Amino acid sequence: MTDGEPGLDWVDAHCHLDDVGGGEEAVLQAVIGRARAAGVERMVTIGTDLATSRAAAGIAAAHEGVWAAVGVHPHDATTLTGEALDELEALASEPKVVAIGEIGLDYFRDLSPRDVQQEAFRRQLALARRLGVPVVIHMRDAHRDVFGILEEAGAPERLVFHCFSGGPADAARCLELGGYVSFAGNISYKNAQDLRDACAVVPLDRLLVETDAPYLAPVPHRGKPNEPAFVPAVGAAVAAAIGVSMEEIASVTSANAASIFGLGLALRAV
Image (cartoon, helix red, strand yellow):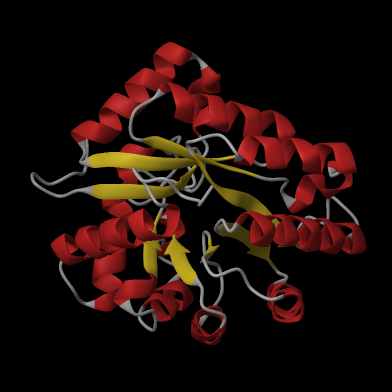
């Protein structure tokens, strides 16, 4: 069963297909099939370290309608050696790799020292600027430092704040930095009024929807493994928060994702 409505075209701007169903190919094909049945024709699968970045690039290469981002998450910032950064650059040259991410800062778990997180963030931002590609940002309990580093280093032209977790003032700051704001399934949760208030201040031309699958399944699927087929449920919550139709949310978020990531187009000049 899917949440899709006939005729709507959705993009899942952020998922982790390597982690859906344990990475088994038969399960992955079924997940992609359910997504398409729900109207989710395109999706971006995201790396969080070298292994998952390799996997994301491989999945994108093997499956129509799937693109990839490669990067080292702040949890794994200690692994970003010079050799690792070189490999990320090599992966970023593959035709269906469309962004550097997810990268950023996470002060909630602090699985890497904060100074190491910050240095890894800066180095990957510099890589993205050098390549001229978008950046997908993870920030948890670290908004001030993420914004500060982006101001100091210079924000890339195409910038996505994934699984946005702040309030309206934080969303406004993302917009001031030229970013797009992406909402996941937690916007549908009963206790997420701050997220809904933040969503309401984001212009339609800066808005994205994502699942972050297999995490954060939206209502009415909460408690189950998440998957890209549930994007329409996220879109429904976003539509309700803003006060527009699901049709409009599907249309604008798909156009935004295609523009940011160059889905179906050559991303970077040679």
